[in-house]
Length: 290
Image: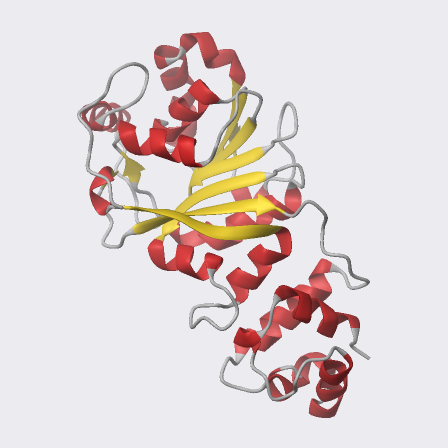
């Protein structure tokens, strides 16, 4: 289901003309280097907020708010919003946009001017939701960092490149199942939550986008292995996808024989490949490293 740009710029939300006007006033040109594509469609941001099931008591963290299209829609729906923005010009301008367009909610907004990968704490109450149009080039590392850093985030909805959305939501056995799929599954139940057409962005990207929903597991996976130990197995298994696990994990285990012993002890065939394994099987392998 793709979306067409809306002509509905009513109320506080930004429409195409507002976005271009703001950008011109700030001298902003979206940069490829930062993977910036601004959403210029009010209906699309409303749809994202609706799909994210943002509630009036939610504390939402948004990464890469840009000129504020999604931020304003989130602020209308949530209790408070904290936006993390790396770009100096955009970070400086956003509070004024919020104050001008949603003055009654301005005290519910906080800005963190930082690289999201460096963020270890946020102002105010702990975030309950992450909703973001993630910059394409850093989407997966940022998502995994935020989930690791803020265990209070129960629900996440991110807009990413369609191909990345497919990878994140892939199940074992799928051609696109890989490191992002397993690491996301460590934290949450992951599913594709819709598609977004190219024409709701400025500039229009040359790829389609997808929405991914992640609902955090009620209880973390129980294991004697640390997350770092489990993720080391995942990284090793997919570093050489075509190899059997016995071969792919030989470096990780110290030898092919040690890899085989760990696999057999974990109840996994040494001849299997990484793309066939569930996150629980990777956990079992990590637990049986000699």
